[in-house]
Image 1 (cartoon, helix red, strand yellow):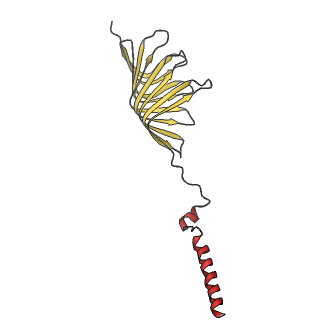
Image 2: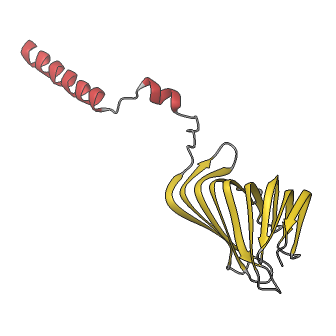
Image 3: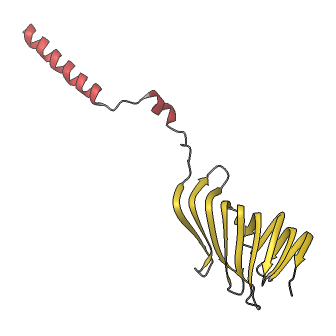
Length: 186
C-alpha cells in the first residue's frame, strides 16, 4: 500500500513539475518593460520619393532623396542628395537640388543646404531662371522661397547677386534684399 501512495505522490509531483516548467517564463527586463511605451525610432528609406498632394489629389511638390530619415522627437525628415519638384501658380515646373535638406512635417517648410540650385521658367516671359545659394527655404504652403545668405539670380543671360532673397511663386515676384550687384551685357 505504501508503494502505491508513494507512486501516486511521485506521479502528482511529475504533473506539477510539467505544469510549472511548461508555463512561459518572463525575463526581468521584459517584466520592467511591460506598461512602458517603446521608443519610436522613426523610419529610414533609401532612394525614396515623397509626394505631397493637394485637396484635388494633384501633386503640390515631390521630394526625391538618396536617403530619408525621420526624426520622431522633433517631427522632421532629414534628406540627403535632394531633388525637389514643384509648380508655381501659373503651372510652371520648377526643380531644386541640394546636398542636404530637412522637411518640417508640421510646418511644410523644406530647408535645403549645400550647393542649392533652383531652376524654372519665369511666367509670362518664358525665360529660364536659376537661383543659387548655400541655403534656401521653401515654404510649400505659402509657395515662397527665401534665404538670408549670398545668392545669385540668373535670368536670360543677366546675373544679379545679393544677400537675401524672397521669391513668391504665387505673386511672380523676386526680391533681392541687400548688397545687390548685377551685369547686363548688351
